[in-house]
Image (cartoon, rainbow over all chains, first blue to last red; front, top):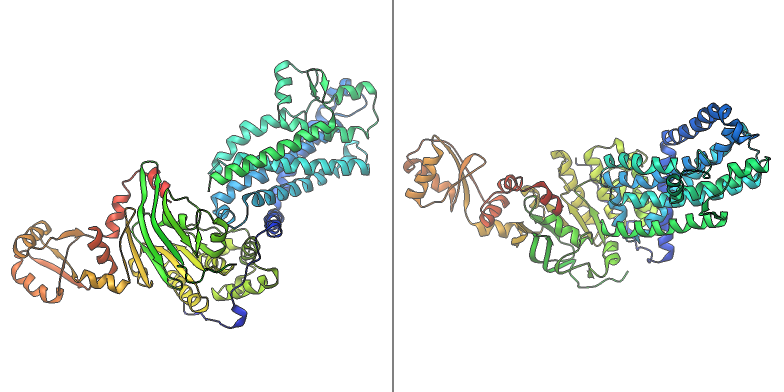
Length: 291
Length: 328
């Protein structure tokens, strides 16, 4: 190739970089976030596959079981009951996968480009979390739009509080994905983790059944599952806007109890937020060690 | 940024890196002056990439010190990172983004001022001949185009030192040549120090100075010409009817130690052309072919290490893969 042309002149003077500091760190967070969004928009398949499972749960499982569950759920259809939990877990899955996508970044070498940049590692991880949070919330919003089909009213307060809860928990779950990815070097290793960690978490989250009157082992398992604390506030946000018999409400939304004490919703949310901060911290430490 | 006037571009003293029992780098010293093109030459596993990783703050030395653009790689990590550009052996592009998006990402991450970023991207895409492909997704690029894009990216933030770790590995000869053309072009334009590793002898000739590395040590460093002159002997390679006998006869009749390299009896003598007629007259083993070459960097490597780069690499392949992975 002999097409090389050497251009010189004042316009090619070397650039002077901006000073490092909070402004530059924020800019790094933003560009990592924007990359997540560009990739999301480019891969529409991800959105469609992310929606497939919740739609199956809601309309196939929900409608299918409605007849069987009527005696217990009374005036509430089973798909109505499933609605908040399915939205919570499916979007949280999307968020976890957004975190795990850093394994792909590593496999394709791009992680290295990010990790050698003169910015704090936490800025990279924060950008990833914001991206995962935004993508998952977007997917949740599409599902919320289906509320009318399962007998949930379009109440603005409900919608706003659901979106806010989704965004918070999606941030946390992206951090969770990043944390478990810090040690995964190959993406073949991802599927076993999904099967052994994420699927049980989904089943134990209270998405499919109320977390009351369970056998002891199941009660314990659901209480130590962080997803439970993300599903419960979501269910409450929806149920306060539904009309139902007090007995039905007590049966379907008993709240999470610790040995008889009902954990208040604000504490559920706080637990989720605190876990997120811890997991992000652990991820930051892990990534510092694995250059 | 604070410039350290008069400081070496790279200054390394007593650098060591140990992975458990394995000593990847065993106490090396060298200095690269600003504006130089400095090459690290050696077989795979010689410790070149480990050294580069330490200089780029990606690995920590277990002994010795290293300064890059005047900054200590151990204590001034971010300052070092801001003053270096990196092109790794393995690609580090996001293949789902366009060429321009890859560069923009890098510019934002390194803090190139917004006012000049777009122009800088245009400029560098032009430099590496990818201006027309700026909106193309990198997935559609050939290996050579990707490497050129990585070089453009490595230069985006105007580094003082550009590190190229095996910049031409895995490329076809034409792309290899074009990578060198771009490196030369950018040297003319930007006042930059280039530090590269290679195990292609012919490419090392593009450097102002080279250090030859083998088994974690620098065995020689100088300009390519000086290194070749120091060897002082021509390389003679012959194929014969009986190589064993030829080697024995060379030892007994001429006092020359010959060895088998790339399937030919190989030895070094001063003034090879004049030696050949004697060889035919006195060897006593039928000679099928003869070649005489003035010293190349490969001979320099041979004379300092006792093996050619290719031989050193086939020996390397017998080291368990785990140990090799540690040195990447």
